Length: 302
Image (cartoon, rainbow, N blue to C red; front, top):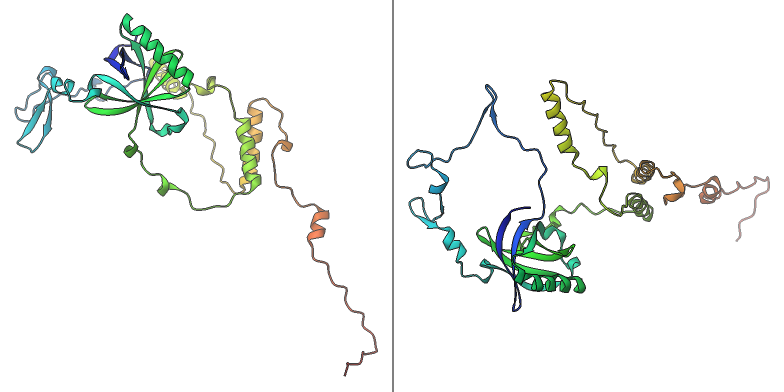
């Protein structure tokens, strides 16, 4: 069972739902420590007081705001717990919006919200079913870790999920990253759509959606533990230089189909038609027949 990282309540109008917040995700990455290479002794960081020059214990450390080098305002956990904000102790629902109206770039880490007590079961279920029937998500405000935050509440498998969100002014304007204007043909767009069709899946499941980097690290650790050579590194494919975009799209479609065991056929790709001899002959301008030379000359008109 994941540990509770915050306790409070969801405020929905006059309805209050006591909840515990737990992380909705797990980190399965392999963690490394720092070691002294000469003797493989563990390297650790010490917290040193700059004035006394000695290591201090965690119980001696607090927060502070530096007005000047000589003047620091101490801030205690009690100060932060008693902020004059309604969101300091509750997740305040501000509005309900369609999920598609929120740019995914603003959505961050996810947390499960667990009803804290038996008395919370009914209002918790009420909010779950109301969100489910409305097909909307709730936008809320809450205060964690020394700042007020914006959040998104949604339902996953009858459990409320809170996603942290970026404030509008935290999103950078991407217009300066736009490429220079280019022209695309209908055939190129149709070929890109054909490639998308061959790569479409119903769910993100399977071996291709596993963390191969962590697996590779585990293989190296196991090889070193057994005092043997690590697995050979496969040669990466050199990225082909795109000379003909249409040809690259067509080849990508065929490779994607072959990888999925589907029959490959050029007929599925909307390729621009190549000119045939007949059509090429039509495009050639007709040659004028040379004038026949005769001995007699036509008299000029007067």
